[in-house]
Length: 271
Image (cartoon, rainbow, N blue to C red; front, side):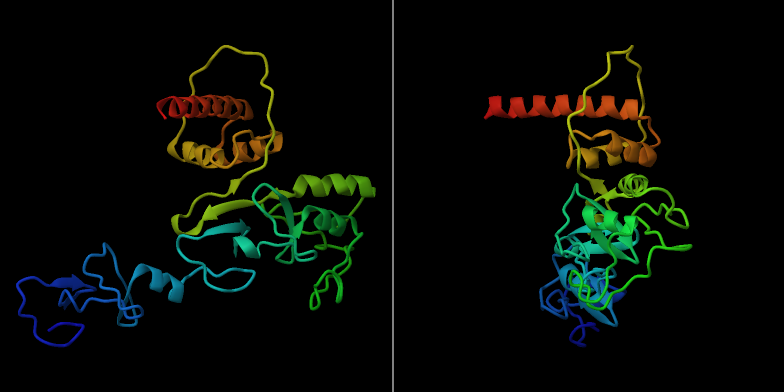
């Protein structure tokens, strides 16, 4: 019997989905009624069949930490710690500035702050309170005592109490800031930070052949798509992710930029 209409299947050809048999015309999305006989995949939930778009729209596992709405499978997102945000929801909790790829940010109590307001929080110059910056229902304890210092994207914990001069604490805040990176939720891409400046290379040394592992190449190529010229801080983060030295990363990005320019020139010549 057909799982869709309940009638006997007499056709020579029929479909098998979710361990049940279907007439070709009966296998349809329960939401939009799209025929699924030509689809590569279909999804089942509570006895109903769905197309990919409706399944992720209705039952998406990931939800935006900003608006709490579902995030579709192929949507670009911003990540911070274990939280995921729509691109338009990744804003400073104080000034509501939209943070884009390459900008620095900090986190406190699972709230995102732009660079300026995060540094103010660390230095004790800014205390989010009712009526300030749109945080009508959020207030934080003063930054005094154990556990009061903010946490940041990479999980680095600050000292238990803010010691030293404000200038020193400002430098500490700058060191702890992370860069925004977007990723494609549906394909579990790595974070892709995107801030950098041109870097002058040191004097040429004797060339050494270096072999890269698959995950190292994937991280570097993904980063290169957003930023061709990583600065020293970017290279430090990439070194931690890949296990490669900063010097090796510098040379790889230099070669990648040269190859990219050659490809562009070739495209112009062919065009």
